Image 1: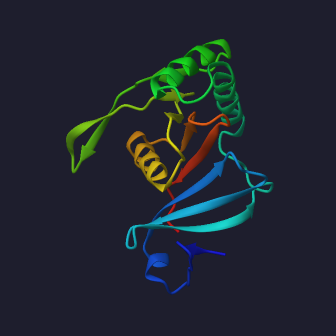
Image 2: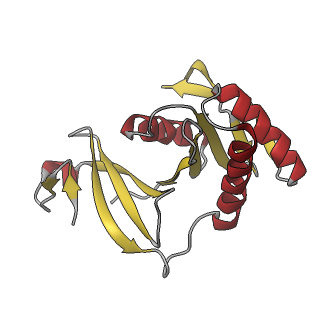
Length: 183
């Protein structure tokens, strides 16, 4: 059922009518269902619809996602958990080379505000020139990290971002897809 926070989302809700960006999230707990999140600018919150069947939908960069997550699992199995993010980023580079996955490390992107360059965003890794890979060593991936990834996808013009958390013995990962269609 659609909701904002713990409250059901009504079709008449202001939040439902002010949505700007759709995200599809697949994570390490995914078992054939996914949660579609819609960020609402008005309420600054996420609305979610759980339990959509992905079997009938084409998953963007499915094979590439499996290969990247497989590399991350290999890195975690060999190095263990809880080291600094940069160590995992560099280890992923080694594993990407071994698995022949094309990548860029620390490729800069200009951040433009109203036609003016205001800074640079430098993602950890870009795979296949289409997927942002962001390594983390945090307690848990939250809406904060999802929101940041949303901004990264907008800046780069890409549609898929992977958040990989190496903090715990089990890899936590989130797959975030930016949809440019308005709902």
